Image (cartoon, rainbow, N blue to C red; front, side):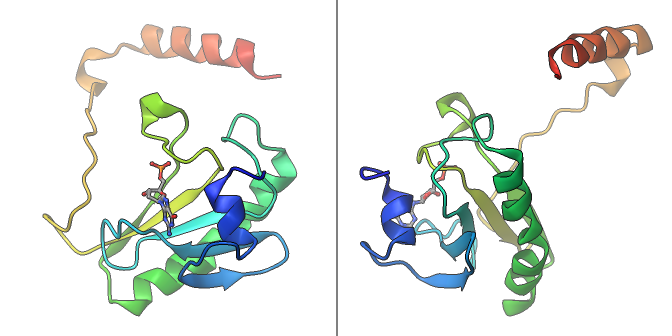
Length: 140
Ligand code: DGP
């Protein structure tokens, strides 16, 4: 897509610090470097977000994540890696070309954080079943 910044990066129209490329996928360092080695992995084929992504494009994209995440982790001796994909502004998507963040982790205070509530104590089995039914109805 002509006005997409990640398409321009994939096409080499604007520079990037590339870490991996093949016929389907391009991976490069995120400018923000939330943690050292923070990498973005994108499909070469433009797709706006996860909802609009063809299953084969999603499959090809995620198939590359294990080797890229392993390399990112090993390059700087990280303790772990978070894999993050944001969809819609409400979920902090700011570039509307599907991308996977690979975020190496170096311990508390390394720059990345997830607020992750545990509601298991206040959620009943009935509520879980009701919620599952609503989602199942939408899966075609
Ligand atoms: P998200 O918020 O999930 O849409 O992440 C988009 C990321 O893209 C954000 O962390 C910053 C990064 N980014 C934006 N513009 C550029 C760019 O021109 N080059 C690179 N390398 N990264 C960019």
